Length: 142
Length: 142
Image (cartoon, rainbow over all chains, first blue to last red; front, side, top):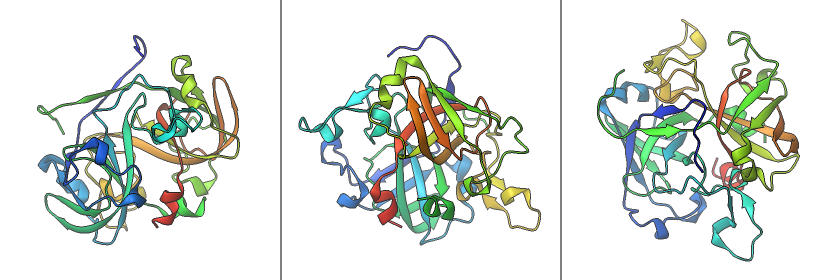
């Protein structure tokens, strides 16, 4: 899909995932499928933005899935031919117009350069674009 | 904060928020504070990606908060001088290196061009960059 009009916005990665996961095919698809611990290496220029994050906190990590196909609009979830086709906005497929990954993880430890987190289903080197706390409102609205 | 090295990524908005909220100061800060219904006007070129989304679904809307200050790394939450300073990655402040907004809303109705949703705390015209379903895993991991 080519877009030739309208505004665009520029993302600057704030860091990268460091993980033992290096194979896209072997990566768990969802966090309940045994994703390993990982490290979020944060760029020194934005490390002050980590202030206040504590071990045990639940956080949301936003990544940029730079190997995704941005022209995909419809998929069969998990590549299963038996499942009906779904629009990518109704799936967590990495293939989507803006391939942003959303990962809820627990903080194991922190230091000045980054975070050790549990259960992150992203491969080594994945760019990180934002980190946010989980809010009570996220839960109570369900 | 200026970044002069490393890769950057380009976001193409997939649509815009249409809302009665037009004043940033009057906008509720969190969805439990009375945000109004809104409409997500989706670009015709990506509308196929909505396929399968049904009324009643809980979705996550990602927006680009284009009025934010991207150089802010530390804030006092909600501008309250009595509260301690926090790194923006430990807050939902719109002011952050990549000003992505994360909004969990319910789908009221859909048509070919977009979605009517309840309780979206984003002002009229806010660019939309992605839509994702809420997963069971998001809940059970808390």
